[in-house]
Length: 463
Ligand SMILES: Cc1ncc(COP(=O)(O)O)c(C=O)c1O
Image (cartoon, rainbow, N blue to C red):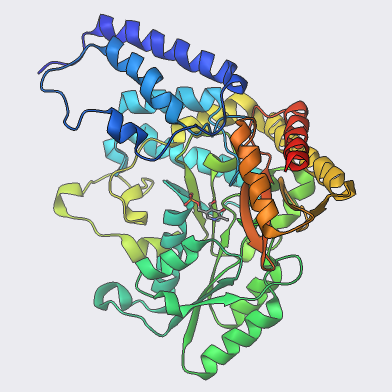
């Protein structure tokens, strides 16, 4: 079999780039959420793949006709659910080239430039976030994977036998009631177990309470358990609350426990000088995760795991079969030594494109605008007689409610989402259903934010 002829590739490639350019330009004309029923695509597509190849024009036409109408447009400026993200122009171009180059930089030799660009870009990003040169960075797919690796390193530090003998049921991981589920999943994956994750209570701003953490760690030690890892969050998923990292580290240090900071979302806010304080104390942490695919305008997937103890991470995972041995000198990093995946996508290329194209100052300005517009809208919401804020607003996410029942708020969210003009998601705070509105897309403008607020008010009035 031979590949697509080069002329055909060139023609279809230009068509695809034109499609992407129009898509990004006309995004506001599309409904944020699709109007489809479950099974719509499965029922529409053939049950088996074609016996004979089909022309690319037909495939592209079906992409527009059948796939696009069923898409939730995460790139839409009025996608305010979960955390809004963005594939920026330079990020898309980087991703395009990554798939063309198709390298696998498991070892330096298998793609020297990909290995070294990962080292360069993770250092650049560390500098932007205020992490010192002692932090080694590697790129993984998601924060869930990064955190699982950090917990594995914590286990390695506490129990070096676990790697060979398995089992470490007396190790305990601490995180807050508001931490992301990936912390528990990480503990499940490395064999610490879900029962050995303590969910520490929070204060009225949804931040981990150091006094409860101290009590829990002391009680576990008194019961013969081994506190091994503490995971504070800088930007929790429900409310973007920031745990008191420095105080948490002070307590963890008394037990020699590894501290992993989940800054998957909030780490990018620390690039803005007046928000740098959210990572206060980070220099004493063992690891941190930040996701450029959340708020740094890179297409998914791109998560960076930083650690000041790469030696321990390496001890946890390095396993070199004969066929992967290389004889480069000591300067070389073989990224496969620092985690589970052998194969690695060349993700740093899109990060390099994004960081170079926008530069430090434009990233600061964009993230700063997101935070400012969020705070301005939060003020309007708090002043409106029919609405109330449900949590403080430290970053670019508003948790709010219409005054009334949970059911009315659920109906309001569904009504807003049905309009196609905006997409909101929800959480539960203090037992109540709460709407979440995230403002972090690179194309979002103040006018977009105002339009969403109008949509919410009209939907509320119509209920
Ligand atoms: C605070 C936090 N940590 C971790 C994650 C998991 O991220 P990922 O989807 O990259 O695994 C999320 C996802 O939103 C998050 O908000």
